[in-house]
Every structure is written in structure tokens, then in C-alpha cells.
Image 1 (cartoon, helix red, strand yellow):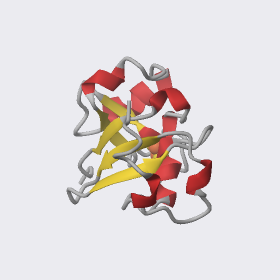
Image 2 (cartoon, helix red, strand yellow):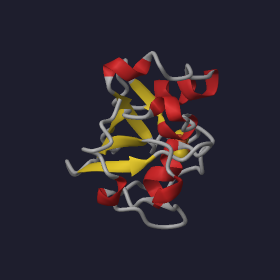
Image 3 (cartoon, rainbow, N blue to C red):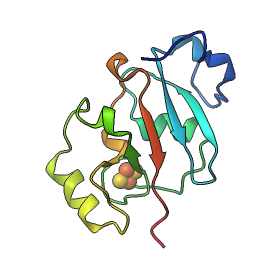
Length: 128
Ligand code: FES
């Protein structure tokens, strides 16, 4: 779990429609440039949506229908078993990607809830 003293959301570069005061926890993302982000957890939002709205550089995508793979992330090992398992359509998309690993997930298929507080993700390399 996050130590809230060390992870004040004031350090988060939140933009768009999200109000950090509404956050219910936070998660960490290492982007494709090697920059670490601490982002607010917002109940019911897809992790892909939160990353995009908070300014994490992500390519255009399919809007969260598990059809493009641009939101591909690696989930830190300790967290993988704590996520809702991938559905068949997510597994099928991951099978088509070049850089799929055992800890791969599509961030558009993970909905935030407070049990994910402290989650750590790394954006997978682009497909080209
Ligand atoms: S946004 Fe297209 S697969 Fe996640």
C-alpha cells in the first residue's frame, strides 16, 4: 500500500476533467520515456483513461474496446494476481502483440477501485 505521506497527489500532474480531491488512492506508471508518474485512482474509470487524461503520452487508441493494444502495460508481479483476470477478448488482443509478457495487461480493461491503491505499471514498448 502507498504511504500517503510519500505520495501526495499534489505531486501528480493531473489535467483534464479529473479532480485530485476525488481520488481514491493512486497508482504508479513508468512511461515509454522512462518518466515515472503518480496518478490518481478514480473509481470506475479505466486505467487507460486516467493515464491519458493525466497527460501520460499514449498513442491514439480504440477507446477501450480491447481492439488496438496501444494501452498495453506490464503489471508489477506482486499486483498481477490481485487484478480481475483478463477476459477472452483481452487475451486474444495480447496474443497479437509483439511484446507480450506473462505480466501483460491492457490498461483499458482494468477498472480502478480502491483495492488497487499502490499499483505499479510500466507502459509496454510501441508495436512498430
Ligand atoms: S485502448 Fe485499445 S486495446 Fe486498450
